[in-house]
Length: 563
Image 1: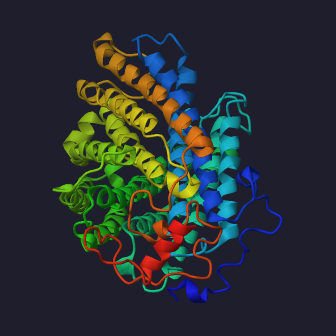
Image 2: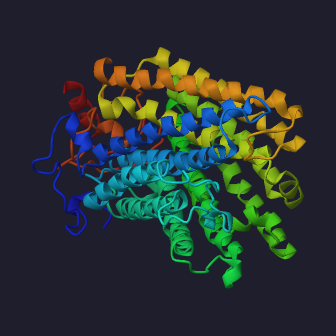
Image 3: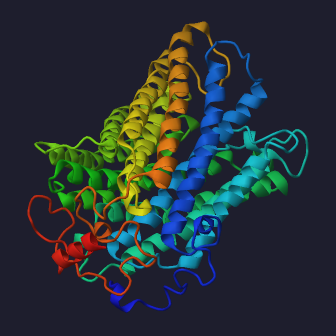
């Protein structure tokens, strides 16, 4: 079954909205099964933890603005960088992408909701639970986990205070819960896309964002059980005293690295693939041209899924793995540049000769693409064994990683929020505040993360709170960039709140975009198209062709104008 016309009752069980559920702002604080409510819950929670993780980052950059360790002691610093990395990955970037999935996918494919609404709501409510567990680690004896967001044993198995409940145990428990929540979300996304598409929407007519979401969540289903299982084994070693990773008991700490990186390298593609989907949706809209090479852009996502599962040893080149393994994984890691390059080429070809509309969403998309290309160049450098070993554990790696996660992925998320904000709130945002947000973010990102590359090449190690004075110049620049990034959040949050409360009313399709979600009122009703799901008759990027997307499109658009 690929149509909502005959929805299988085994899939959609929860009525929408749930009887008795609040129908005002209180619904965002309730166990609500509406995917649009859950999407906003995810995004609001993620933005809260962005503030928390960003605050920790600014404390670290405050420490690093001088060579001496004079702001926080080294134990506290270790806890800060561990919690910053964990919060930004597991409580910001993954939840905010889950929020976009919930908001966009049902509307884009003409489904009334996600396939399993109750499971969807349960997956979301696990996020604040493990967020509380993680933050509670600041209050336990010994403070939070301090062995990095990767938590390698034997460092992570040290518990000098001997307490059963300690920061590391809470960290592992939170990560395991995060894994379970993400698996539940992945089951929902994959099932929804494969089984609830509108009549006529074949896979070849599906929006690229849905292709990238399907690809990313497939990685989740394959890779997350390895990380979750590895984390549970680490918890047993720490709390019960087993020896999965303890060398003195016959265990192997390198085994944990295999479990960890089997998922955690592909996790980069779980993050960046949906952002590729955002770029693919926005560039045709604001260039007024069809997406160049649609089948290749969609197919490249699937190729990335396959290759991403055979690159994890790339992170273990210095850990004593055999040379043949280094050579094989160097080649597989480099091969990912091929499908990624196809996407970049398709975007540039789409933009070429287009009538570009440089509003806030487009500026963030272009800025994210610029940063991603830079990160791709340094990524190729890190894929080669000699360079990787030379800059291993230096700030070069930190700079590359942050260009991907913040420079590209987070800016892509900002682009998505601005682009679809009118659709899901019914209000337009303020362009002036949006462009100020972009300007501060783009400058702050490059001031903050570019200096890490020369620092790494000069040999400055990461995870240190004091350093040789010869590294001071670039560290001052990086810290100023970090503070600017902190300031950049202010116009963003001000814009979101003021626009939603008092912004001008939005028409159904303010960008004259093509896509099923733009044939819905703003904001969409509870079950989207409800009883009248339109039949799709063409692909989603027919800009400039005059080709309708669905049957009776003119009548649908006329009814939206009259509403």
